[in-house]
Image (tube, rainbow, N blue to C red; front, side, top):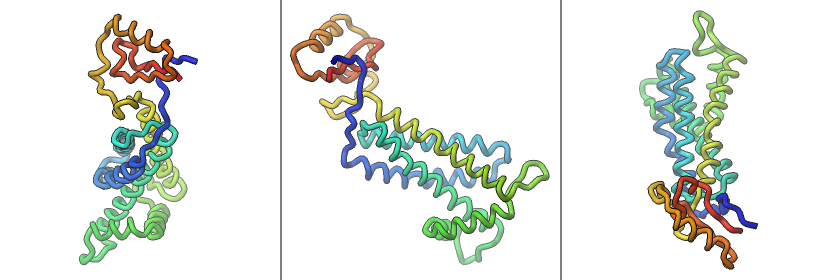
Length: 232
């Protein structure tokens, strides 16, 4: 059966997992900036910072998929959780470390970086500290301080927003047409333009006697080249 639509091969190179993990670690700097920004920003502006951080995590997932040459949308959608959770965890460790130093809960001998490392390496301590803050509350709307279950709901909403885009970005990237012959993502400039004669040659080859004909975007000119011609 002949299909004119590109179908991902489903391949996941062995180098994809180390690349995903490296991008997960690379979320650290921006996660710390995000944590600091949410402490400094007005309450109503914090969702904007959360949205931008979520989009940035999605971009990191996309770049990891490009460099890892992942052509399996389901796999990259699942693996993207490693990047999203790393960014979320790092920003929590940074946020709690900042609060501890702002409140004077750490002695002068302990640096902010040391407090952050202590939080990041001890999830139990991080969780217990977060629960103590949830009980007391940290910020509010107007004169009302938000604490307890309401604050936990806000934190869950933040988590949901941070995770919202990563799976979408992962699936979209892995579904992009990939040239299996050259083992590379075709450049955009390679599939711009149009040529009727070239299209005729492609159709003749597509319906030839060959058992499999895969065309990447660089092989098919014209405005509809995103729909890659593939014969299964």
